[in-house]
Length: 404
Image (tube, rainbow, N blue to C red):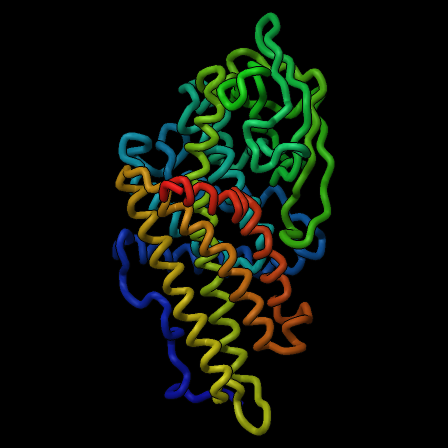
């Protein structure tokens, strides 16, 4: 039996109802537009793409046609932000709206593929690349004609970025790249791979450089099977005597570690925003189910234990949203919110796993089935406490900022 309009709230208690800083009325209108587009153009294909463990390359062009891949990039590189690096706040905020609404597509893999391309791989080219590099690699990335990946993690060096073993040996006209990377989102399909490698082997984190590597001779990719994110490709990448021309060095030689650290702030904010969006979606879907599912002659939403579960989740989601928005506000103001971003990433990723698990429990046996998509949400969420810096690394960072 459907709950009546009087007993069924238009929005779940605890969810954002009004315009919340740093967002504006204009950005909230943009949010409606993004969400509507995602629900109409991506969500209907989620099941198909999850089953095939792949989504078409054309999706990047489709997203690009809405301007969503270039929200924070300058117009001369195909983006829509007039200020670009000179005034990035509006572009970052528009990007944040998109990141929060993209999980409505119903596939963590699709969202991850789009984020990894536009937010993680193209961003360092934008921030540290030359004008010529941006024209050659950023612009076709913004249009969706070329797909990009960021390759840092290695089989023997995950959170220990300074421990990477991939080497770039200087040769006439450029570098020879040898080594391997793993867990690289878009790693199978990427045309452009922004790669971290050692240029000074004995230099530790001071000896790392960034290179823009084009797919070609000596570059191999092997797809990896995984628990969640089925629609995204995740790869192990090998480099065997890959020649990288000198002009494809990104930024200064031996400054790659600093670029990685700078990129992490936005990557972790992206993950926090995506988690907040995913929490709100799974909460709303579960609330609908609780109103519609009857047990012992009444909707299960009428049982005190279920009401209390929703009360707890709504409170936690609001705390996560507020924490994330505060970190975002500080970030776009040009502050250095290391603690705030780290806290937001740490708190939201584990909370999303817990929220999905609680929502699955409310669904009972149906939550364990594929029909209601809750099992997918839980599987997709589990990467959060690992990717972009594990929970343990986040706690280490916070411990150091606290002076312990």
